[in-house]
Length: 238
Image (cartoon, rainbow, N blue to C red; front, side, top):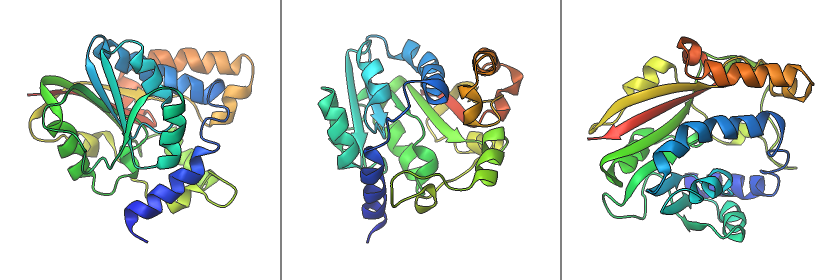
C-alpha cells in the first residue's frame, strides 16, 4: 500500500467519528481560538484550506470569504464536507490541483504535522497563494504540555480498529518551525494555541473549564505562546 493510500484509509476510518464531541469543551475551544486568528484575514477573500477534513473550519470561513475551497486526501472526510454544501476537492497538499496564484489566503490546521514531505507541502502552499496574500500554518510544538500529555497517554483511538500511531506525526519547536519558513514569504505573526491546558479532560470540569478557556485566550498572543501545543505561523507571500 502506498503512503497516500495508507493515510487515506486512516482518515476514511477516522471520518465516522471525527466530529464526535467537537462542538463542546476542549475541541470547540481550539476551533474558536484558531478561527480568531484566521477569520480576520478571510473577509471578502478567496481562501483555500489544506486538509479540510469534514469542513468544520471551512464552514465558518465560507460565511465571510468571497470563495472558500477545501482540499483533502480522504474521500470519507470529503463526503461529510460536501454534505454541508462546501466546495471541496480530493487531492494531496504536496501536489495541489490548482494553478499558481489562485488564492488570497491559504491555511492549514492540524494537518502539516502529519505530512512527511513538509517542505514540498509548504512550497505548494506558497505557489497557489497570490503575491501579497496570507498563509496561515499550524505545526505541533514539542515545547508544550500537549506533547508531554501525548507521550504519557500514548496513541489515541480514531476508530474501532485504528489509533494515532498509524499516521506519521512530527513535533517541531518554535525554532525549527521558523526555520521551515519557505522562500518567498515573511513572518507576520506567531501564536500559541493550548498553552495552559495540561490535558483535554480538564475542560470537562466546571469552573476549571472556564478558567482554562480564559487563560488560553490571553496566552495565545503572550510571550508564553512559544509553549502552545499548536504553534501557528502567519506568513505574507512576497
